Length: 199
Length: 162
Image (cartoon, rainbow over all chains, first blue to last red; front, side, top):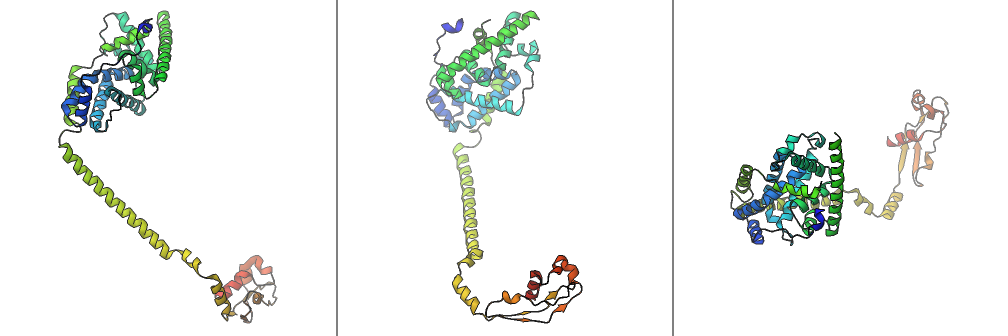
């Protein structure tokens, strides 16, 4: 099992001189915010895309996240957490708002294979593509908090502490959520895999 | 199937470079700090905002104080402050003369009523009762009241008011 060999407290690589960049951005320096954008935009985009599942929506929301961040950066207070925590929190709220205002347009069960192939995954084999599609489908059936923990921990390699700061829970709660999320994801995948084999 | 390993494959997801470039330029050019000098904009907005809020607060204060004073002047509560005992004494000192005119009787019974209005008069008051005027139609109007031998309170009050 891969997760057992993996250290749980990997420190998220922060941008070099991030504190100074954030400080400059808070003072209104666009070039400083530009560098922060370059570093964090792909991560936020991935985070949103996995949760939303549509490239266009993910692009719109990512743009909105950074626009909101730039417009309200003067209110940013350094509480000892990485800048990414703040961005992820904006992204989470953005996704929640998106779901609130517009119910999911796509029925995950009826999604065609091309839909996921268009996401930009560099998976060559058909079997690999199908697997990724299945995981993506399965992740979306999880609770929002479980999704966040799985993406932040295993896609973005955030530490437990950083995830806890982002989703505003204790580290213990995050560990528990991670354990439950992985267990539930496995269960869903086994069920789906079984269904795929029989069909 | 190992879900964690599969999740890691999502690391390959990358946004479209054209979109990234466009979005970056849009944010940095149309964002909060673009256009006006920050300090000027903030100061102007601050002046407008604080000016409006001060004006509104002053207006609300004036309204509150004004309405409170008006209440004090026009409130009926003010009357309750009047000395009750003094008022009573004053009322008793009045030599009231109440003339009851047009006390009506019910035509149905045709009984001459001697009013009991003396009982409601003050000790010093003298009551002059004018000769009873019998009316034909009162009985119809008063309905059940017409069966009583004494004048109704309403009719006495009517008479008093006249």
